[in-house]
Image (cartoon, rainbow, N blue to C red; front, top):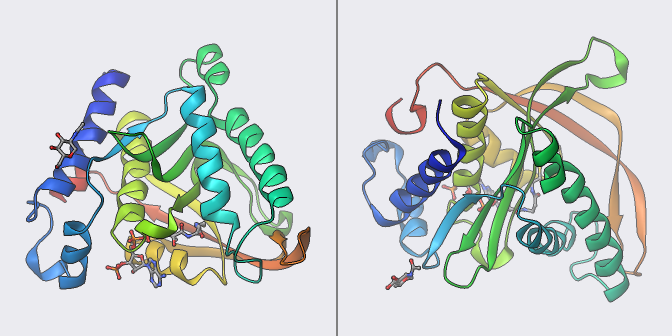
Length: 252
Ligand SMILES: CC(C)(COP(=O)(O)OP(=O)(O)OC[C@H]1O[C@@H](n2cnc3c(N)ncnc32)[C@H](O)[C@@H]1OP(=O)(O)O)[C@@H](O)C(=O)NCCC(=O)NCCS
Ligand SMILES: *[C@@H]1O[C@H](CO)[C@@H](O)[C@H](O)[C@H]1NC(C)=O
């Protein structure tokens, strides 16, 4: 059994390896676009990827980061949030993150399969990105079929000023590593709004396949007028089969 500490080290190591080594052994040159290589070279310095492991202060910082990165500029919404919107969204985001990934949960249930992975500057702790993963009920749309449990990735966001540098790719791969190597699952599910083109392209690039579409869903939109409204949306459920390799990220 790997300990949590050595697993964190594994994640940290993979992140450092992908930043510092310009020709990682896993990426064949044919699958490495020139733009992608440039993006890796121009990443911020001191970038590291860590498990939160119940750290409440870091969790609150990450929830605040997420509010700006996810809710401002959401399709059909305000580019900039009003102070009231920031307050209300970040308060509910903090509550949500504590409920899902908080230390209390981890202490009570030491094997809780729920974690948030954070990309940050290891020198000043500025958050650049995050991705959550938890074993959860996967609901099929309109109650048409039986629910089951599997790792579900959610709450992925990367800071606007550091996008298109492969940070989301690293975060998603880190959630896959956790689901497979630590929790022993062979698949990861996620939900994404059909209109979210960047996210949809990212997931397709990483090998996620659409499972079903739910056109009865709703989403929240912070409007330019300063309120937050509910709008109909189409949600896609996507799934990736992780395969059997132990260190799949590097050697498959
Ligand atoms: C979606 C998001 C997380 C991507 O983060 P990122 O770090 O910029 O993504 P990466 O640099 O890892 O991109 C990997 C691939 O995803 C695709 N992609 C990412 N952003 C894209 C964009 N704006 N347009 C088209 N494709 C995009 C590309 O295929 C890209 O590979 P490439 O750069 O080699 O072409 C980021 O745009 C974001 O935080 N958006 C707001 C929050 C959100 O929508 N989260 C997803 C909720 S389901
Ligand atoms: C941060 O980056 C600088 C420049 O690359 C390096 O000298 C320094 O050791 C790094 N600090 C940490 C904590 O990694």
